[in-house]
Length: 215
Image 1 (cartoon, one colour):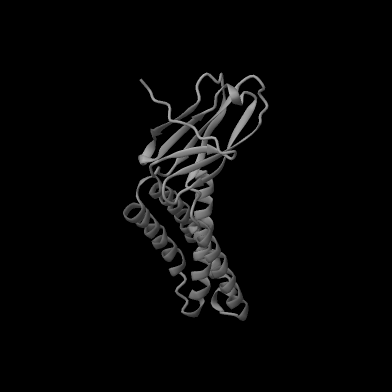
Image 2: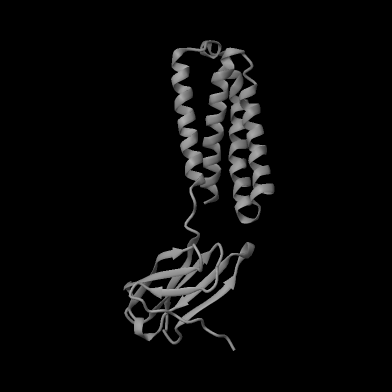
């Protein structure tokens, strides 16, 4: 996952570098290309630290690392790019490339800005089915983990998350399907950004589960 974020940062950085380099043909200040890319990496780090924070903020730091790598690559390539005759002529084709780069950049940024589902699957498997219900625990940065265990009634089944409602009280709907292990009951561990009480967990058929009260 971290590698993909770094790769995304490199792509964004190279787009900014290329965009700025093409614009610099008008005034021949080609050094602006790696400089603007470097400044962008610092801006992304600052945004992650001061406006996002926590686990998500760390992701912006990784993204900034990819942009910084793109800036370094651009700096190393700059002397070779400047030697090309096309680096000193702003052509009609450059306008088309600028539009394409801008559109791709905005599409990538727009994709990153899409809201997440708010949950993820930590783990799922099988148990003996001796206990049924759910328990809640806190994981990193205040996020929550819900462990749902199904009883003997569901031996041979598999449990999947169908839907998580984030508006109002947290409502988790799970779907029970046929499983591969015919001798054990399923369990699932669900990570959540937050839980708004009262938490309700039920199947698509309407059966609700109670919280497991620890002695």
